[in-house]
Structure formats: structure tokens, C-alpha cells
Image (cartoon, rainbow, N blue to C red; front, side):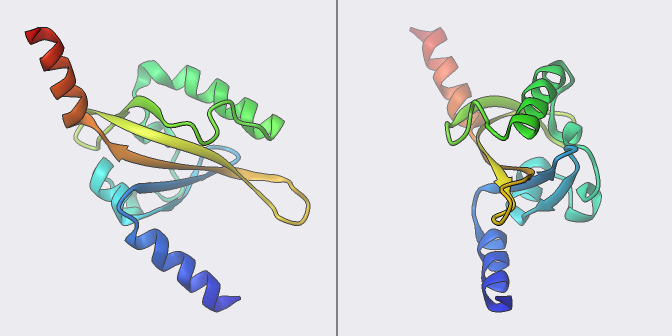
Length: 136
């Protein structure tokens, strides 16, 4: 089992997309190097912190409503569906990210442990598309 756990850690650490795991309360408990590259925060800066670090203020209420519903009900409306949203970089700038979400459950009891998000920066693509739309 330890070998599988070590392999899982290597996979997460070497994945090109940001992987963020938050417990039921929305506290960050896992943050891979790609998340550091995307959001600007080091692992040490985010562990034990709220997801609010990367959620723009105007999106927080909607995020927490959905998060609480998912943690309570064990079902996520957006599960597995790529979702375009804004996120907050450490510098304060907003970036466009495409994210997918999943609920993480205890395998034995099926109890909800938290949520994992996989994110990728799509800012350049969105800005190109918007520029093309304005030009036409």
C-alpha cells in the first residue's frame, strides 16, 4: 500500500494541471506544484488555508453555496464537467481557469471527505477569443 501511496504522490506532483484537495470545511489539504505555478502560492502558504485564497470575492457566495450542498448531499452538480470560471492569483490578478470537480469519499463507508479540483489556465485562449469577437 505504501508503494501505491508513493506512486499517487508522484503522479500528483508531476501532473501538468493544478490539483487542489479541500476537506469538508473548504480547508486546503493538498496542493500540487502545478497549483503553485497557476496561483502563485507555495504549498506552505496554502496548507490549512481556506479556498477563499483563490476565489474572487464576487464569486465566493455562489461557490460556498455549491460547496456546502455537495459536502452535505454527497453529489456535485458540476461533477466531471469542465467549468470556465475566474480565479485569483497571489498577485491579485484574475485568471480564467477551466476546472473540473469531484467529491472525495471514504471507500469503506462512502462518507464525504472533501472535494478535489483540477484546474488549467485558459486566460490566453479566452482573451484571444474575445479579441477575435471584438475584431469581427
